[in-house]
Image (cartoon, rainbow, N blue to C red; front, side, top):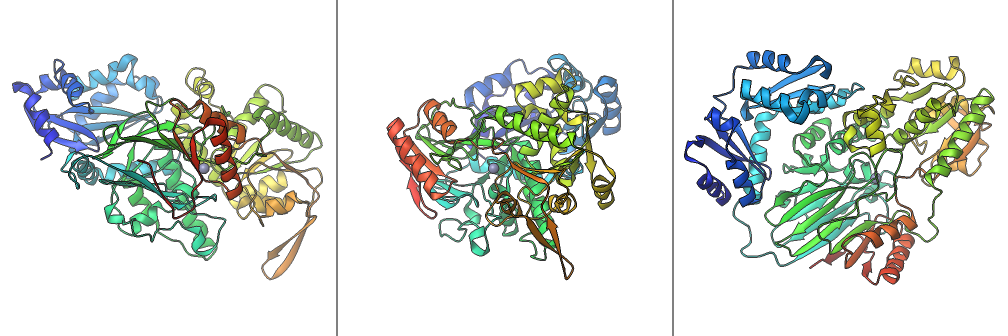
Length: 632
Ligand SMILES: [Zn+2]
């Protein structure tokens, strides 16, 4: 048994009657048979926490809580009707009850009073979660995977704790830390980095480059130092395929360790990976992995909130900070050894307040090495402000609607789509745009539904609107879900002026291309591209002014004469531009001693690294794939 459990045991009062102490990841959970102690431990737990400096939780021994049926009745009596719909799910293994509510704040009650009453009446420990205000089958499925595997999860989480607190593999103190660059170095796409110390191996992100072909799609997974069975953890910065797309493949190859991320990242990552399987099968390329590998990924996720410090191996402590890039996107801060080194990987990040999110955080307890993305790190990468871009977009919409046309917005499913929804909803509400319907196609709708499950991750303005004024922009009646082919046809043929949002953002396939075929020849319509357009994509060709596009319809060629207006807006990016990157490095507190630039084309990362060196007199580098850098 781990030493820390012995230590906790010795500190417990005699009457605690604790029957079992186990780990849940880095947390310690105790089960007691003494009801009075469970309800009031007279500061005993607080004392233990302040001594061992770990999270400790007290629950009842599984023989104590009252029977499930009776407990559910009692819980439904205690929680006020105003909390909306309730789902009550019991986890007898852990003496916990999960209460899913439409309005979790009301379910919890002022300073948690309802939860206290529930505990004292039924002896189950209540946990409250939000039912998304737009129904999401995916969230229901994910929650079911977790609930159905309670028993497995209990053992799995205990095993993580045993590794963290158990005997070390190597004797003595941690002496070194290094990072190996397996992808996304001097390029964008296929992010994967291996962080190693003499004790631990952590994989940061594991993505796929969807724009590349053959081997170049995947990170260098065959290097000798990356052995799946030796990995302590996978840490996922955010849910974009170039960061998360290959994690299910690790599970296909037998990985059964934890994947650390935030809750929205877990849900959106699962959705994107499942979508990648569907697309692969549709286009007859086949899929790299199956939906059961995605399920394994979900089963093995460990959720952390922003700024919640957690041990993830015997010598590494992880903290996520808001990265401002997408809902739940994180900068990953690693405290290595006992004060040996502090390393932070930004993932993708935006140092700007967007219409949805707060800017990336700049204050950290300690920081020696900063590994930063450099997508727009080139000296000419200065984008228009969000306000300018917003005004431009609203102008295009107004003009198009005014002449009786439709606006087609090809979008990435995640991030920008939801930001544009917020902008349009506000403009209509404030009378800056006429009351027109906004048709939201398939995947964009699913991702939006996930957004409504996690309002805590929005910036303060959006959060206030949702919590205090009941003005959730995503629930506005202007948004109409388009699911079937029939509904899509109705939008094209029977509807008047409107806005249509559909994937893919680069028009490499999907509904956006279908809409283009239908809307492209009418000069009243407009097309607005808001995301990066890859070389060779239809979006890029339209940007270059091609006047006729050929499509294959069965064996026949079908031309579309481009008569609709084509616009590009760059200001809605989820990445920092050059100035914001420089400002972020300058404002990071404490100032890092070393800067590593990744995730950018070669010219941009080299230029940014050299400019940051000149501006801040710090050691900077932009490594190549397969290089290893020693941090300490
Ligand atoms: Zn990203």
